[in-house]
Amino acid sequence: MIIKSFELNKIKTSTGNLVLFYGKNEGEKNQYIKNLKNQNKEIFNYEEKVILEDSNNFLNNLLTKSLFENEKVIIIKRVSEKILKIIENLTLEQLTDTIIILNAESLDKRSKLRSFFEKSKEFICVPFYPDNEQTLSKLALNFLREKKINI
Image 1: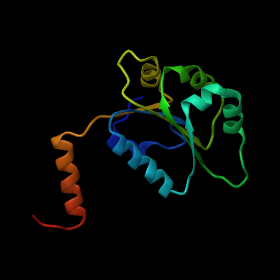
Image 2: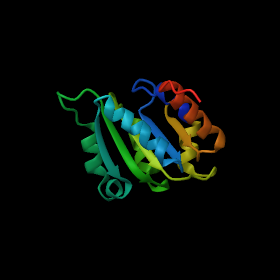
Image 3: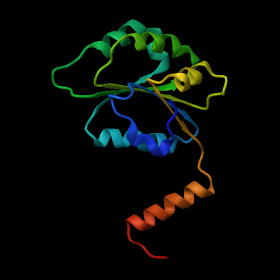
Image 4: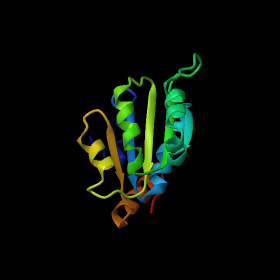
């Protein structure tokens, strides 16, 4: 399922546990991750390289639950096609109260990872395109309205 970046508030643990962020707008990706930190969710950061080297340890850490944590957010950075096999294994498991965010650079339309997330009804795919004049002007207008500044 594809969701636009301005619809990110639709992401809940009940709707989708796996989320793919791709695109060149790192600022907007980081802003959403910062909002998650402000919601007092426990966040774990991983690199794809570390997960590929020891996937069993990652899966064990993912599936174990603590009595004291409510929701867990796992962010995997610099994702490529190589992680698709691990992600397919995760779809078989029931992940409750866990959101896994895959953060990738630009992905081709022919990318297997991108098409896996776009065709799935369970998982979410969010493209982050570079800002243009129209989006920057909307951001500026919203900021000025919020601060009650008249021009």
